[in-house]
Amino acid sequence: MPPVLASRHFSGSYAEARQKFLATAALVGAAVDSHVLPGQRGAMEEELAMDVARLGAPDARRLLIMTSATHGPEGFCGSGVQIATLHDAGLRQRLDAAGVALLLVHAVNPYGFSHLHRTNEDNIDLNRNFIAFDRPLPVNARYAEVEPLALPDHWPPTPADEAALAGYVQAHGHRAYMATVTTGQYTSPTGLFYGGQGASWSNRTLRGVLRQHAGNATHIGWIDVHTGLGPYGHGEKIYAGRNMADDLARARAWWGADVFAPFAGQSASADVSGPVVSCIHDECPQADVALMGLEFGTLPDDDMILALRADHWLMRHPEAPPAQHIAIRRQMRDAFYCDNGEWKGMILGQARTVLLQTIEGLKAA
Image (cartoon, rainbow, N blue to C red):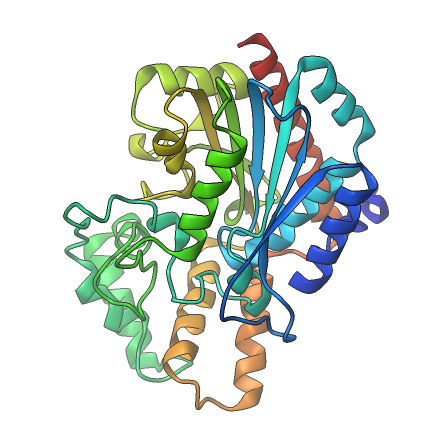
C-alpha cells in the first residue's frame, strides 16, 4: 500500500483514533458497543473507552477477533490496522463468503493509549494480568535485585548507575536480564511489568465482551496487535496459546511455520505470565481456537526497555520538570510507534496477509 494511503488509517492521539474507529464502524454498518472506563479521563480530558465493533451474523459459529492497545501506545499501530480492516471492502466480502464474523476490540487499555503508558491506570501490564488470582501468584525471584538497577533514583541514569546495570547483564547474560525484567512480577506495584493483585477493569470488561460475542462460536481466531520487539517493521507471529501440540499445530497450519512459541525460546517475546488472549479458554471453552500476538518491530530492544525505564521513573517522580515529562512521553510514543509511511505500509501489508490466512483457516475448520 502506498505510504500516503497507509497513513490515512493511523492517528496522532487516542482521541483521534477513537473518533476515526467509531466513524468508520458506522460507515460500514458495524454493530458497536462502548465500555467506558470509570473514574478516569484521557490526556486531553477525553472520555476513555474500550470500543467493540462487530460485522457478521450474531450467531456466527466462526469468529475472527482482533484487539488493539493492550499495551497503551501500541494502540497507534493496532488502531490503524483495525481501521484499515474496516475500510477493506475486499476483505469484508471474504468474511461474508466464508461465514466468518469479525470482532474488533479497539483499545483494550484506553488509559495507557491516551496517556502514553504501556501499563493501565493502576500500572498493571495487562499481558501479565490474566491469571488465576485465587491461586498462588507467579514468582519472579530475581526481579527484586534487578529493579533498583533498572530504575535508579535519578534520570537519566548516572555513569555509575549504567555501570552497575551493565555489570549485572555481563554476569547473568542479556537474555536472562531481559527475561527477568519482562516476564512479569507481582510484588512491586510501581515496578516494571507489574501483573497486579487482582483482575483489572480491562480484564473484567474484555471477558464480558467475549461472553457476549463469542459464546456461540465453535471456531475462533484471535490476533492481538503489538509493537516494540523485533526488527523494524517486521511482524513476528508469536504463538499466544497453551503449550499443547494440537493448538500449536493449528496455529502453524493457519499462519505458517514462522509462528514462534515463546515457551520454546523461539520468539522475540519472553514466555509471559497471564497474556490477554489466554482468557478465551475460560470464557469460550466450547471453541477450537488459534491465538496470535502479531508483534511489529520498532526500535532495538535496549532502546525500547530504556523508554519503559524512563516512563516508570517518571511515575515515581511526578515532580520532574515539565520538559522532562514531555521528553519521556515522546520517547515512549517513538518506542512503540514509527510515525512514517514506510513503516505503516509494512504493517498494513503484513496484517492483511495474516487476516486472510485467518479467514481461510476458519473457513476450513
